[in-house]
Image (cartoon, rainbow, N blue to C red; front, side, top):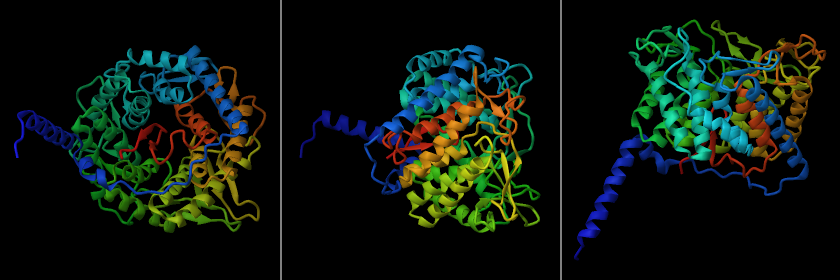
Length: 494
């Protein structure tokens, strides 16, 4: 058989192209055929007038929050709505703007999005105020994740260019004996220094962002850096299979022996990224680790009151279950529901339903209808739940789980619960120049009951998940997108 030189040329180009993709994606190239084969509930096309009205109301709330930021804090990290000022608490990287980019794009706030994106060009991610150290964890999920989420929806090369700039800056923190990152970084100082310990969340919540950066930029080093961290976290010696201590040494890769076990602060998103790495990339080791963690958490950290309220507590280092649940832990029922769907584990969906109900009860029991930062579970003959930290910080975790539960079950009660929460936010947290955190959710008198704070996650997560809760399931469907811990959407590689 005769083959022309032209045919040989194109065959060689195809072969070289395939080898290039494998060199870029490494393990990803080997697992593309291993994607989870998931059956999702049928996506209804209807979008009732009532849900359209609610969706528009959330969009108006986003406009109001953004207007306050744009007017009084544009280019700063966060709006302080009561004093009508901005702060630079995250290193003056315009964090609220970066975190909000994909929310503005999703909600079709075109003018606001265009202005925000134009400002991105002016941010220097190689500098911060003199003597300031940035949080590597927060800048990964808010800055890098925000730029990559916006790039996913927009594909403007500027966003990728700036994401690479953030990635290169943060990558310096990973130059340690183990490859685990320092938790803080002085971007102005070429000499690395920092605390020898990192929390589980700080070390274990960067894989989605850096692997996504590797995929869209073609820079293999970001993938390898993220994978090395995962391997070190898994290799550290532990007492409980499936549970991981809250702190680990970045110098030795060994876990601290004195810490508690939790799915709340300092650990939460580490467990989240096990499942989401499997969904994104199909690597079976993350599937196995996630299942082991769910089994351990269910048997060790889950408790119930006499009134049959399920909760996720903490395991103290003396083996005692601490019957306290953080608002941060209310992401976990949504994660369980997602895992139940992807991995065909119906028992996890039952627990997810129980825990989602508990998280809603924590809102519904207060005078403002807003959820406290921490609740404690007691057997007093009543509900068996009481606030132990009564602040409300505009957090997203409960509405995140409501969104996931609605998408997976189709049960409209989750929309009703979400709308009730949104109405409470409007009534008690909305102020003239944005939204403010509450000092005490048990008090309806707002005099001296507001904090001068509107964190960037309110724009990135809370309002985004509420908007999606009232959107058709075809908008960013869960079988096509994975949301990072800061609610930035990455398309699943098929």
